[in-house]
Amino acid sequence: MSCKVVTFVNNGKKENLRPLKLYKSLDEHEFEYSNLTLKFSAEMFAGESSETFSGIIRMQDDSIIWISLRSYNIEGARVIITQDSVKYLNRMDNTYYIGDFDFLTDRFQIDLSYDAIQSILSNNFFFYPEPEDTAKTIINFKQCDDSVYYCMSSISQRKYTRYYVDDKHTNRWDRKLDKETADTSVSDGVKYESNEFVFQIVKVVPELFRVHDMYIENYIQQQSLYVLYGSEILTDGQYFPKDITIELRTPKFETKVVITVESVSANSEEMSYPFKVSDKYKEIIVE
Image (cartoon, rainbow, N blue to C red; front, side, top):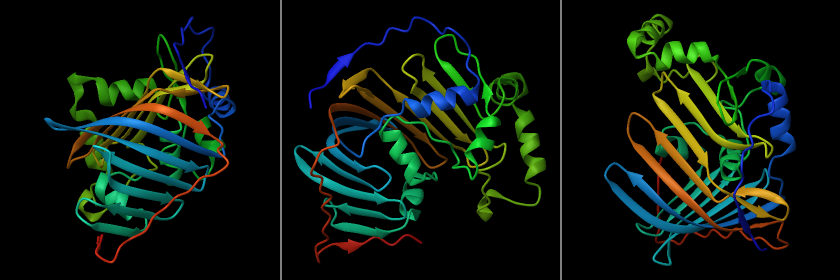
């Protein structure tokens, strides 16, 4: 399938959209596929070091994500993610893992569902954390200011500025956090994915109604995820980002991955997801 890189010229927002209307427009314009294949090159930054690699991603909508990572044309790792399982094969050190999402949570120090990972890779919107009631969740979103993009946030602009941006009162949020967690501690494994210590900000390209960038932060866990999408590829009448940048910060590490999409193929007739573990491989145990 041929791809054409297009430059989208933003002529300015004609109106401010309320979160409910913006969410409906995102839903109507999401990238649709039954299966999807991405060939890409990438560079990963961790501290002062960097590493380049390439790979292939195959996805069956709401079913399976298959990833093959290569360096110097040699496969180094293979990953399969489903709704409730993760399989990982490392050919560099002959190790493997077959189990649940604890593997990804332990490795990347952030809780991401299958839907979140699939949405990140396909430039589609998702709620974080995953809500029980989508209609109720979007009603609680607020408009936020941006001169170029539509913007909505799970917290108000005033609250975000007051607690996260105002350098003159940096201890405000800490005092509130101390009061909230007086009888608990982070070391006890307490998580606050569904309260005010977790927020999400989404910016949307006008007219295309595709996610331009998204920022998620879990304040109490000191975790943040930022995803930025670059120029669009026009493929089979749909837009897909040419570049995907993912930045992840946790108390243990910071990493940034810049993905350049070399080709996109949607709705192929034949898809395979091979995964075979040799007897010489040693199992990874996640405690």
